[in-house]
Image 1 (cartoon, helix red, strand yellow):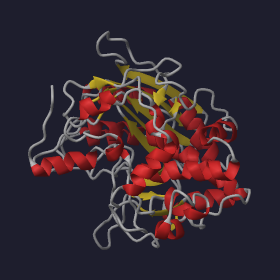
Image 2 (cartoon, rainbow, N blue to C red):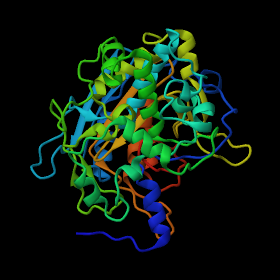
Image 3 (cartoon, rainbow, N blue to C red):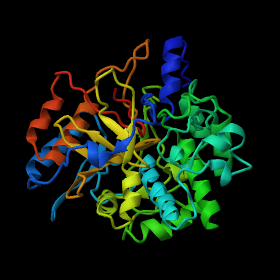
Length: 436
């Protein structure tokens, strides 16, 4: 069925949210600091895992309307894995706790680690203009003024390539996604599409864009003389000891995985399975596959200083405000170099990233010391709905998801109150979930 959008405000809302990422605001990039200095040290006291409460909260996420989810939680030496709901709505196949998942923009943390490794080797300068490394691609003023750091913290002002890469996605998203299931697209083409698109923010202000991380991958290739995905595999994934994390070499995943259902805010009805998809459209910005166990291991080793030198980790945790706030009000999310810190409703600050691709959502957060962690993966995307003015309508799934993640990190069952009807201010995510 062809879905037409006729209301101008709704058309604008769908066009904005079609970006699988959310541009969250505009504050001056010079208002930076290290996350370690700004954010309280969460997790010094690590409550024991309450497996019964975790199970109940995960099931509540399913009961709120999520098809299926799986998760890994860690507190000190304690670990818990769980799964709920179905991996396949047609057969009723249950979700499994060790499944693989497309992790979307969590891939950006891996790309940033690889770039910072090259900074350590003196082959990349964070504050050098991108035109130094990609002179034939990023030209003119942008080639001179946009730095590698601006790519990694999304202050380059370069637009996202998603809309031009998927023509017709606003008018008929199902047809646009179907047409491109097996399409291969080179990173240089993605970069050119983003560079040609009209900027949504001026340079120096935070504006989340996948184009930044496609360009970062190309800078990495220039510095190393190697394919970016191959370099990240050898120098980030393997040293971290990750056994089920990889860039897909085909449209299908290797191991056990759920089907991945995309609703596109109700414009694909019923939601359609996009678990088989050529992920070249995401590349170093979001093509990776992993497991929730591997993600916990990765962020624990990263935050523990096992993948980068201390100076590089400090650079990574130097943040810019992730969205604009009224005067005197601090943002709940601040973005560093491929990683963000955000405050959850229970009051703790955590480090990590989220990711969203067609049909698959993933979220991984850790305390700053890496002792408390949660990674969550789910197989139904863009369940949110909007009114004719483009305002997001209340839904039960979003607060249930936050309740689970917040409770897993804090160990506080009180966070289950997020599932009530009371209004709650939720921090924004950047990999595909508009929650503000």
